[in-house]
Image 1 (tube, helix red, strand yellow):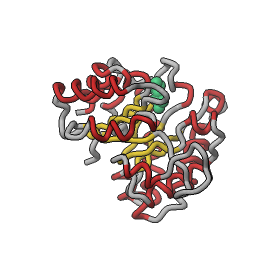
Image 2: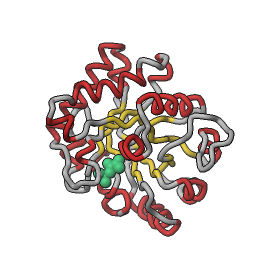
Image 3: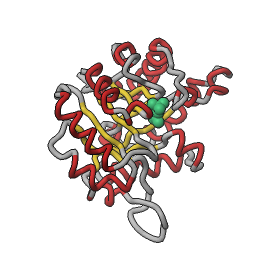
Image 4: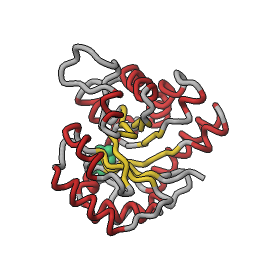
Length: 249
Ligand code: PEP
């Protein structure tokens, strides 16, 4: 059985006050222990998040990391700096990083390796643009992104990864993939993983991301290969985020 994971990516949003509100909301909501929950705030809030959310049902994630362990990389943050803040998960290859910060598959792979090396759980984000979907290239693009990372890892490293399928055209647009569209891509990823190693396919948590909201979460999460969600906009609204956590459990 794969344990669902609901992860809220705050992007460049949020505040200490929102962390406090989220903590209150999580403690009164009694989210099922059958669901893993993660809050992924900006770097400036990570240390406080570790303290404020300690004892709640939520773990902490970071939005990116630098592949090197230290050095002259002004503005960057290493994996060990994240672990020092109590971080467990780290997003790698989010489409905003790929597009706005020119992170290609090799840059993504280097970050996944750095995260694994520090004992973090990388959440590898993959997904096609609208143009790629319309050109019938979903399989090539998504499996290309997945394959670059999976093929470079050992069996033990692969087993510590989470994958988030996030169609780029659905992120922050209000346009969600239909449950059928999402399930189809998740099944394709799982079958590719299973062909490599049946245990890998069976065990890998595949999250869906892209305008998941309180009112569409249950339908998406009911599909057999959708093991949770990576939530952007709705994770900034504690009631909505908790409703999604409930839908997973
Ligand atoms: C995201 O940024 O990963 C995301 C899924 O955003 P949204 O839920 O706002 O589409």
